[in-house]
Length: 225
Ligand code: DX5
Ligand code: ZN
Image 1 (cartoon, rainbow, N blue to C red):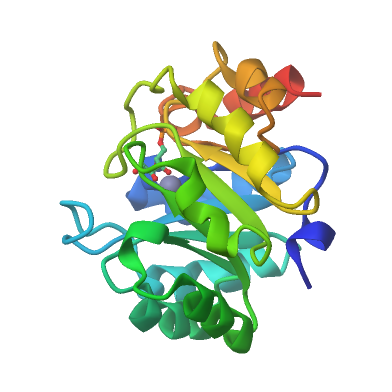
Image 2 (cartoon, rainbow, N blue to C red):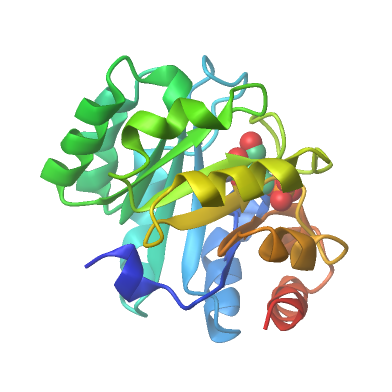
């Protein structure tokens, strides 16, 4: 199984970091009823980003619910040591892991580790890291994620330079590599990030911050189809 098989041409990925954790399962189910298939899981370790967020224990709880309906868990590792977390995430039921280039001493080896663990693999970078830093693994990964905010929290505004950086990333990676964008995406800018090359579009507060998250998801999908 791979990203190429899981995803439609454009996927809007709800980021559960912005969910109401008291009602996480029912919110995920409601979004699946609306057609959401790929869920973005923000793993923060309290070192790479200030808060400890979601870890393998929560992935293990969600995986049966999501997998029984052909959904996928796309795990964004905002952690200092991705090589320690990747086996734990794979064992918990993650379908894909995305690591930060700033956090891996040997990115080619980190990609190989994820492959051995049998999960999809992506790479990402902070807004102040040059897109060209992904060069050594650009041909090896399933997805390349452009962070359009400083990683750490949901609910920030998209950094305007992200649009030009998305175009640069699209040029850098292989045509088969999915380009993802994460941070500050909503109805006002989702068409612009798609036009700049994003195919996997993460949205947290724009979905879960709405009075009707399923309706907000459906509206975002309509804007990119
Ligand atoms: C930020 C996370 C994002 C975040 C997106 O550090 O990586 O995935 O949850 O949330 P919004 O869409 O609200 O910016
Ligand atoms: Zn994220």
